[in-house]
Length: 439
Ligand code: MN
Image 1 (spheres, rainbow, N blue to C red):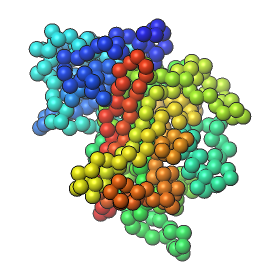
Image 2 (image 1 turned 90 degrees about the vertical axis):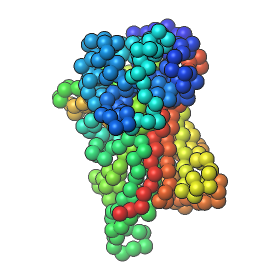
Image 3 (image 1 turned 180 degrees about the horizontal axis):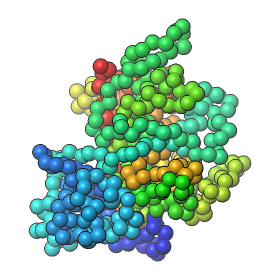
Image 4 (image 1 turned 90 degrees about the horizontal axis):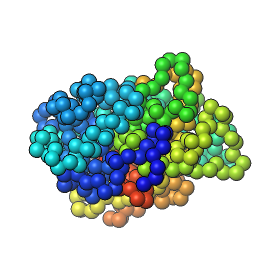
């Protein structure tokens, strides 16, 4: 195993040991939740109240009860009694790491089974909630292939605007309509103006799309007026999720100038409900891809050598589509794309630092979206807008159905897997939503 370093995001310890196994049998070999992951979330067992838990294989361990039983450090007990992770996110990363080491020890030691087994629930019998009360949600635009593809649809010769390589582009999204995986997406109504129409119409969107994004959970955050230096930015990231920024492209095209996305995006944002902690992802850190020759050097406040060395993530991201007809016919979901999270032109630390650079305060439980992550090649495009070239090249599915944009009954599932030589892969669990007809 590589040497432990003193940078928190890089700390490797016994919790990452690939030989470690759990007495919860379903965890061993589990594609998402082996004992090396231990993601945090909020769940309720059937008919019971929400509480904090960790996913272990096909089960969930009740952390509120585990803390109450005196099996976790007393310093953490206050954070684990709530029905959200905001209090835990507000604590320093070192305390999350302490929690992780205790959980890993408890779930790997067979002697603990008699004590903990009554606090385990089959995940299939539980309901997952939003893991935190999200005060603010901001969506960025750091997927450079996405920005290039979309820009090209509008400006074939000059796809990226001049600011793109100098400043991480983002907009303030809507926190009230963020929902956990499994929430249906009702087709939104809104204003659109077809190119050949004289006047806009109001009605159901005809160009409903998804966006594959990485979600970033803010940890302690900063006080108003106090920027976050980039070397400290990793300490303010508690963890990650998948994020689907459902988008009504026809509404977006008509409304977005001059102030950016509004109702085309705010009808729903779906997230995977498990928080994969920054600590769990320590083995899956990569160097940020070098900027292409000729690209501008970022301004000093956005530049940190350590961040360039280890600020990217070895994550493979996939999107699957299942139509109502496919499900009725017993067909497996069709993979629309597969790509890597290294498509981010700016690192997570850079977007956190940029967000706070004017003194804007980030709070525990705030959610950031990376922006759509498309690979350079068409097999990894992260939205139908790109896959179908603006709706001009339909996708043909295995049963002969075609899609330009989403139809009622379509189900979209995002997934992610972190992989690195010598380590047990971990996943995020699904981020799923099915399209319902407009009201
Ligand atoms: Mn987006």
